[in-house]
Image (cartoon, rainbow, N blue to C red; front, top):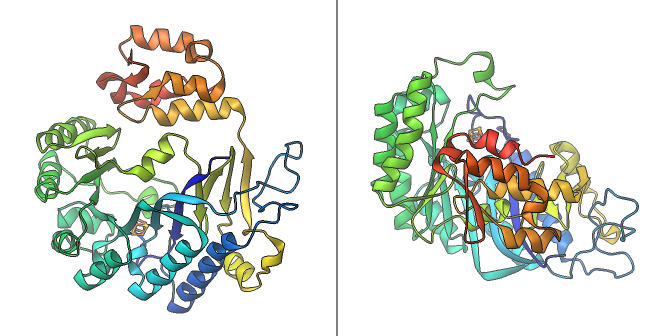
Length: 405
Ligand code: SF4
């Protein structure tokens, strides 16, 4: 297996649930938050236990017929090149709690000195003092959930902060020493107009931050918006908002390197690029997804069972937790993912990388689709790479669907 992994750490607590959010996150009392962090610390610590070669370090294995009988064997210590602490709202943590988490991670994994270490931050939950402490713990990238610079829109979304909180926290992050700042923005939200979106983009880009993620609102089942959503922008405005995003951000020197992500040159998010290029990743905390050695699985989603498992944990078992949705990816699954995720990036997929991974040329597998999409101007095929054109990006869902078997 690949020796390097990306780590995702899930902190599932928020001050209040937003009206559009279907993530595994909820408000919780102090006791639950403390017990969860303790359990998470133990899950992390389980990776420090020496590997017994007769057993292997045990992660779930779906396939009884594969060459390991007890699960996925891990190297003695995994090298980590990126860490992403997400949620939920991990900026609820105190500096002391984050310090314990970072210590546990460094004790259990070989964290590359050059690792990108990101944390998500809700502007309503941090201040200069907290961000300075986070930075001093080695966190070197902060992702701020700004969403909008319009207070009415923020209220409709059910966010706990105002636009002035967002402005304050971006300034605080700079002052705390973060030279790699992302802001998450959300378009196509209720009552949003082209003018208000332009204003949000301009106000955020004016800070000269390194990275902007601009996603469109998706109405998910089970959220308050699913049952009762105020009027959304009409189709024409949505289209204009979509085109305006690239135009405005380009004028500030941001490059679109993925369908919804923009960065200053060299400041792309390494952790997310890992997801899009099929890098192994290990998720820790409830509901966190992993992809290790061609197996996909998630940590158990039920927080009570998660906490109770680690409160009664026995390291001798060598097991790292309770996992669900275990799936061994077939070669077809892996080829689909390679195309589906890789084409999200502006630079597209490498045809030689495809051949090296799968032992077949991309033309052998997808020749007919590629030929048709080239003729329709949806993709380009240059310098060893297949990539979406601007037109292909506009209709990316249908283009990428053609790579599914
Ligand atoms: S703060 Fe983030 S994770 Fe929490 S409810 Fe809102 S969108 Fe969801």
